[in-house]
Image (cartoon, rainbow, N blue to C red; front, side):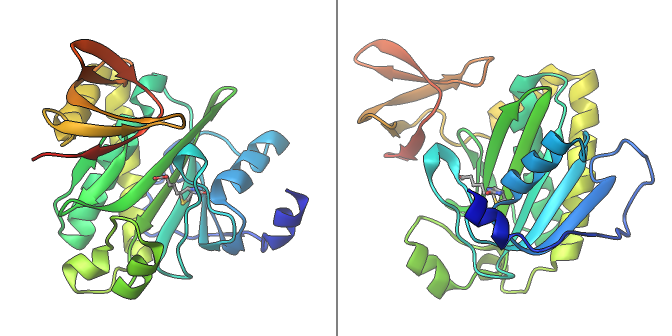
Length: 261
Ligand code: BTN
């Protein structure tokens, strides 16, 4: 771990144009480093030193040890992805994921004009392929929310990663401006966050209806095994409800692949 700390280049403050000016808004302070181990890790360390509060964000050009869900890694060559972590003090922890995935959908639509879907729990897909992964790491009072959006990744790089993934540039045919996307994303996050304060249930229901996984036969891959069932709904705590041999299974940490459409 200490070796990774050596990878972290110094952070500089980002000047934002679209800033609403509110001291408490998400993105009130945005730090940038050309290269870090993982933005989630850097932000977590800032929290531990008392250098971050709700809304502080860290953005990197590239990560040398980017982290994904379920202990996986997250790879993106320099400039090919928007890599950001945001510290959030959720009003209701269960809606953190909902706020973030809906805000990413909004930002992708307004910046790249691409409609997207959600794959449970929080992958954002364009045309059925993953363009964004979200890693929520909870601790103490809040959550470090890591967002990786494939922006300018070329098809050769996507092929190399080998996942069922795409990028906004491949889909839209034009280069994505990271500054504009970042700005829009932070504004959308603040919008959704405010809404979750006044109407947490409506944010949850919006997230639920954006999930394409529901109603399909799915392959559920956990750390232990892989099995097939039918995704019927999400529970109020965010668990995916899957029927399997007439049993209803609550799925929390897993990767889910749609088998039939
Ligand atoms: C997933 O497995 O789908 C989640 C991927 C999350 C990647 C982002 S990139 C910025 C932030 N820093 C990390 O190390 N991971 C997240």
